[in-house]
Amino acid sequence: MIRVLVVDDDFMVAKVHSGYVARTGGFEVVGVAHTGGDALRLVRELKPDLVLLDVYLPDVNGLEVLKSLRANEDVDVIVITAATDVDTVRSAMRGGVLHYLIKPFDYPALRDQLAHFASLREKLHRLDSAGQADVDQVFGARPTSKPLLPKGLTPETARLVENALRAHPEGQSASECASSTGVARVSARRYLEHFVSVGRAEVRLRYGGTGRPERIYALVPGA
Image (cartoon, rainbow, N blue to C red; front, side):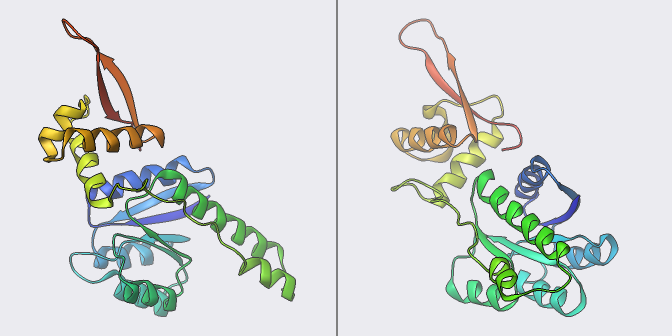
């Protein structure tokens, strides 16, 4: 099993990402950290193979954690963050991360990167020495993340709608979601239907006294 440490300041996001890892064959979550200090301590104590590292941490920037890991530990890192500025991306690349995933993303985006990591480990494990063809394979094309959201949808609003669903595990209609988020009903429905289409939410019908049944959306457990 490939041992993974999940680092994120948001407890719910860390839980979701841990669930993604647990769903992926050959991987297990050995620890969760919500601060940079805890991340460094747990890497020393648990010796994970891979760290999923957030950049925005309450005590120290994740890039500083990355520098410390590179200087003192033998562990691979995938950055998982909402940071989209080019300087942060460049710093992560210079720090030797395997990949850089921008939140929010769906399970397949992380699953593909984990599968790629497992494949690289296996290739290197089989080699006693590496020829150029082997090196080209290791440093070859990486899986790319598919577009996160359809045109017209934004990560910020998607996060609002997702948080509303998390706060109402029994489910919400588009009207109820719009009321709790301040988003227009038509927009809320677009986000909800998108979550259904990518497997992050499920829909059921709620029947009232008259008229058409109402669609009720709820997050899929572990999504």
